[in-house]
Every structure is written in structure tokens, then in C-alpha cells.
Length: 299
Ligand SMILES: Nc1ncnc2c1ncn2[C@@H]1O[C@H](COP(=O)(O)OP(=O)(O)OP(=O)(O)O)[C@@H](O)[C@H]1O
Image (cartoon, rainbow, N blue to C red; front, side):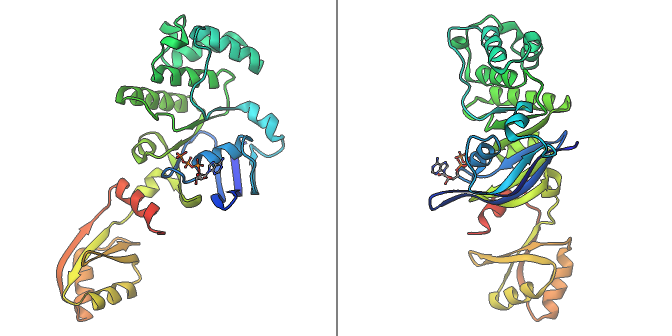
């Protein structure tokens, strides 16, 4: 059993708002997935649906091989989709004991999980004395108490200082290296790049890309070009099969490549078509530029 979660055309409308539209992807065991998208792109709604706290409008999803009810399957899922909320005047250990009681799991894992998130030494400190980063780490320990198959986190580093962000990311990597599958929602490309092996990019509820983070990085870049005759240049580029798209930005054309190409090759091709260039630069986008390109290109 290697598939943890399958979404099939999952859809959520809030009245006229199409929060999630026909979203399909699968989560395989042992990988770290990021759902990446700007604010309002449908990340939290997607997590809410698969965790049964938001009713879907259409489509379907199933956990594991689909043989269990969602209610039962969710017992093997650890999720933090809200701000960490524990009893302020109880210690970290006491709060986790209470969680064990509520979830009907053994208390034997409390110290191990506190150690994993770097809070063992603070186990007898009251929750009210914790920084936001420590609260978030306690929430992670709490979600791991029953050794779930998958850990789900919604914007796990939101509101933390750089040190807190670093600690959470290191903990996520450590949990993943122990074999736990992870799904996290983030609007931060750099977070997904640092922590995740796979990514699903959302924009306005629609999937723009899903695959490996490395695969997303393997773009062949783009040319920026100028000519006295911009119209002929644009027409010639659009005729060339190796370009995915061509757009104009302040008198310069930007042509995105589907396949690798040398600047000399496009120069020769255009010259043969009677187009003389006054500017030609080949650039490979940073992942950030690609992300912005992907999330803006449907405007
Ligand atoms: N309970 C709700 N009622 C009406 N509209 C909602 C509700 N929850 C979310 N939406 C809308 O659905 C869309 C997707 O929101 P969602 O919170 O899933 O996005 P997100 O990617 O998680 O963004 P953020 O990181 O800002 O939370 C947005 O347009 C949002 O305004």
C-alpha cells in the first residue's frame, strides 16, 4: 500500500467563489509534498476537504486504498490546520497527556515526540510561557503521538521569526527522514524548495503544475529579444515549435523555451526569416521567477 491519498476532480464552491476546481493528484508514501499557491488559491480549502472539515461540492477523494471510511482512515493522519491551541496553565507534558486521553492513544510516546521537536527540556514548562515557534513545535509533537502515516501542516512557519522558521523546517525534514509522509500548504516558494520533494501549484483553485520540485526547476529558460520590427519578430517566434509562449514586455519580447536552444540557433533562424535583432539574451529563470510566471500566466 503505497498510495496515501488520491484526489479526483475535487471541487469546492462557496456560492459564486470557485475555491477549488477539479483538483486531482495523488500522494505516495515517503515523499514530502507542498501545496503551493498565493493567498486565496484554495490550499486550506483542499486540506479542509480531505480532512472532512469542509464539505466538498463535487469530485471525490479517498485515503489509502479506499477500503476504509474517511472517519477511520483519518485516525492514521496527523494534522495541524489551525493555530496551536493548548491549555495555557498546563505544562507541555500535561497537555500532551490530555491529547493522548482524548485520542485514546498510549502516553508512552510523549517524551520521544517532545525530544523530536526539541522540547524535552521544556516539558515541565507551562504552555503560556512558550514562544510561537515552541507552540507550533508542541502542536507537531501532539500530531505525531499516534505515529501517523502522514503529517499535514497548513502554513507551518507563518508568523515565526527566521530562527523559528529554520527550526520547524529542520524538524519537518527529520520527520520525513524517519519515513513519515508529509503534506504541507505554503505560499512560500522558498519553503517548498527547501523542504519538499514534490509540489502541487494552485492558482485560483486550479492546478497549474504537479510533479517533482526538481522537475519544476528543469525549465529551459527564455530569450529576451528586440528588433525594429517587433511584429515580424513575434510572428517568427510564434511559428517556431520550440517556444511554449511569447509575450511582450515594454517593447521587448520574452519567448519561453520548451526545449534547450542556443542563442546562435535562434539568431540564425530569425535572420533567415528576414528579422534582424537589436537585442538577444538567453536566461534561465530562478524557481521564483518560474513560480511567478506560472501563477500569473493565466491572467
Ligand atoms: N468559509 C468560506 N466562505 C466563503 N469563501 C471562502 C471560505 N473559505 C475560503 N473561501 C474562499 O475560497 C478561496 C480559497 O481560500 P483558501 O483559504 O482555501 O485559500 P488559501 O490558498 O488557503 O489562502 P490563504 O493562505 O490566504 O488561507 C478564497 O477566495 C476564499 O476567500
